[in-house]
Image 1 (tube, helix red, strand yellow):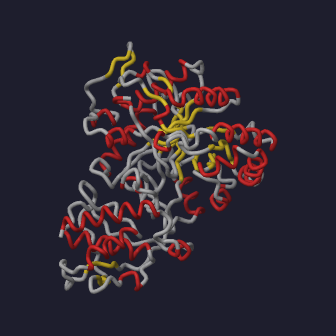
Image 2 (image 1 turned 180 degrees about the horizontal axis):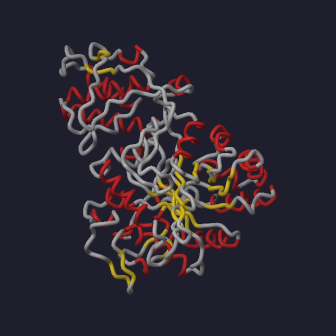
Image 3 (image 1 turned 90 degrees about the horizontal axis):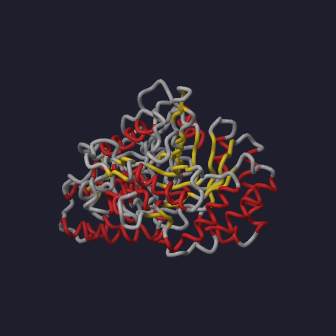
Length: 491
């Protein structure tokens, strides 16, 4: 796709349907609510945080009953999700689809949850899946729709499939007008699009300008944002000065060429991470997300689709247990840190406040940290093994070149790893027993932008700790190798 390429990844997502200036009021704002955290915030507190920020829509990646119960009678519209792992069962059994709808949709609708969408799968046609879900995604979509009809909720709850932007391209050019669906999935995509159109549903796409920049060292950085790009693309009179508009309109052209030019589009995920890569930082994230809000608030839309943009910002909070296979930035997409603290100034335009409102009533563990002992030697053969173990079972994605903690010295890196493990394990004394290497301190070791965070208190933390190190096995193995290389390079 040249400059238009953009790849979205898993995770729980921020849904935003923004501003309707025709009537001068915001018509709805939503967030992707991901739950891959070692210490998740209580659902009731998250719902309050959503309401305090004027967020009126939320997109989930599953149908967790505790979250849906918390959303009951909240006035927040909901998109529930079906994980890819369930597609095979739903594709092969109408009864399975009916059971899922009964348990996860109908029962909650009758209990006051305003469910509007059922998202079937999450980027199931991503090219890196090598066609794993090709045989099951469409039958699953059909069976879920049939189940919604049978349950009598299909007028309120519409089906959709959150798809990665790689399902379409522009044949190697930068012109949106060359857009069409990817050849290997085109026939299936046309079937899916026709089904969505026939059932009054929308096409959901995840667009990530950050990934364009991450994947291509020659990608013009300013083109990823909404200001500062001077080399506009002229596509038969349509002017593009940012990759979001170009990517979105590549999809519009793909739909139009296949006879569905009027199909509604939802931007299922869009955002910018704040750590884990040289281009993932607070300044860029604030520039992108505020730029996006300003870009769409006047209902200008895109060159091919003027009007309101229905979009879900990704993501609500950081997720410290997400897979880092795509990159270390995967755990840092949140508008808020995992304790519900806003990361930067961002005006959503839905409240009288010019910034985000933090979660309230959050309790923290004691103000103490696990660090490398001043008497410990860097030559100790246990150093590399201990750091590798800590990072494999905690979160060290803020370490490395270009990250928030990239300026730490060797001892600082080791201390960060030890403390991450210590906090994730609820400051258990045994979690700071690295052999002759670690010590507990009450002096905050944070340095500049690098924060040694204290974990929040969580009622579910004990159960989560029991699974620490096994939740994300592939990620841990990858991180283990990377940290070993990193540490041995430093020593």
